[in-house]
Image (tube, rainbow, N blue to C red; front, side):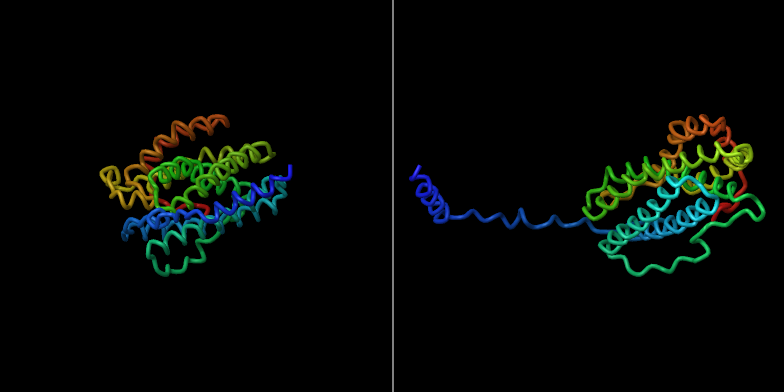
Length: 277
């Protein structure tokens, strides 16, 4: 068909001569960000520190797994989590900077690692850290970050929470896989005794973190703070209490550990520092 090129040329020429519709400047302009409060800067600053500390602690835990000759899959998972936590720290730093945050104080080096239990077997130190950091901390982190993400509309903060929430599911699963692995080793009776003996104290530390005195009354924050990925203090306690029945009780119950009793006992546990850090 000899007329096709001419027709195409005519069509192209007509298109080139037609006035082009410029995109609206309003459509191109990014939406203004809500103002960032001191609370926003403080919270994202804490998140930078928490994520960086988690990377260091997980790196140390993974070293212990290597030293005890643990499953290669567990070691690979641990190393991947270290990279995740460092990425979370970088993303949180971007939010902190976008919110107008300045330099943060250096982290105390003694908090960036784990401490063994003296002469106790390495497997027990691994169990203690794995249960408190991952089975407890990372399990409740999943619903926590889900709620934080739901109300977040500031793009840089939303991107950070999207990534963190996606990774937290895998971090949670690492903890329960590690516990199951330890309970299949010859040291299983000692691991079970450690969990039954110390779980209430671990819960007490989690309770103090998520349910500070007077926290239940702090049930409101500004819409701007919510848009930056914050939520009321009272919601932390609600999320933890829901995780007790939905997550901890059935998951520990699979291993014959009464998490409900440990949680009740945690309400009167003495204020002692976390053993693994």
